[in-house]
Each structure stands twice: as C-alpha cells, then as structure tokens.
Image (cartoon, rainbow, N blue to C red; front, side, top):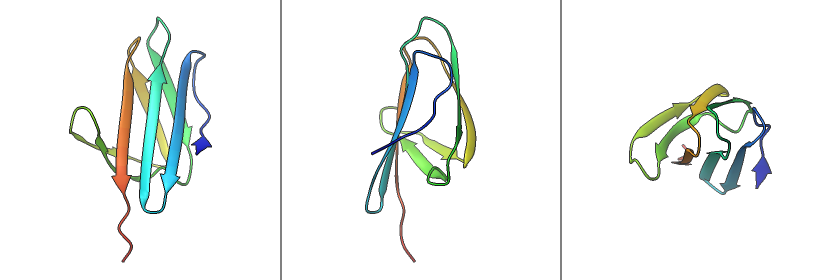
Length: 81
C-alpha cells in the first residue's frame, strides 16, 4: 500500500497495488467540498468506479473534487502486452 499526498485536511487518498491490480481510494471526511490534487507515476489508467460502475480516466497529474462525506473507490487491472 502506498499513501498519496492529499489536499485539504480531512481528506485522504491511498493507492493499493498488487501485481496487475490497482485500487485508488479517495475520501472526504470533512464538512466542506475538498479538492484533492495528485501527481504520481503509478496513477495513470482507465479505472472503474467500484460503486457507480462508471469508467474514469486518471492521469498522472489529476485533480478530483469530492463533496462533504463523499468517497470514491476506483479499480484498474493493467494488462501486460
């Protein structure tokens, strides 16, 4: 597990990697909207939001805004060619 720098206080993000899989979890535990800024070489990929079932393209440098109490769990499997 690798912790990623997060934005405002009361927000948190972590990137878990195992073999081909990556799971990115972003939490806003605060009472205000939070903007979380990432810049990490392990991030890029076409993730699936685990709960919404929607696709989400994440770049190395990314900015995500979460409403109070909102969280996102994103998953991607990198296929080796």
